[in-house]
Image (tube, rainbow, N blue to C red; front, side, top):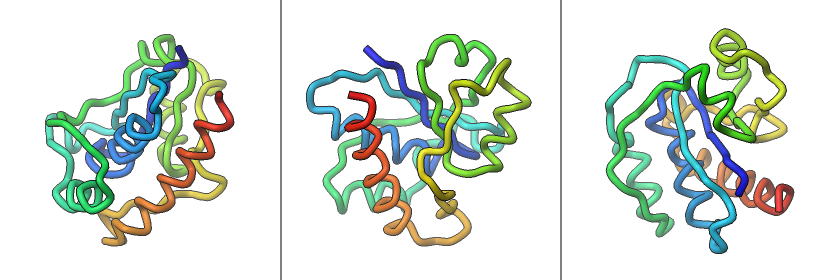
Length: 138
């Protein structure tokens, strides 16, 4: 079973959205999936309300969530670590011992909807890239 970790700035928007989208799309339970933050700003917080709304609108189930920060240990625990933008990659370089497991989820950065307020666009971008990822890793 491949272990996948999604990472974003606060673990309340993009990474948690990717986490639950991939769990939803992984019908065969071939992956172990989690999400975490690169920063401490939102630690302990639940999924941001507009993210819950876009997940609900698209029938993606989710559970109670507590934002957590990635740690050095996660490098050894996960096969792949996918982040949403270049700032996340930069942060991971300071946290992890090596970057050979870290990748951008998309060919382009996925903008943070906390700032853009476009949660629907973020959902569509993450959904399509998670679908592509599942097909690629299978």
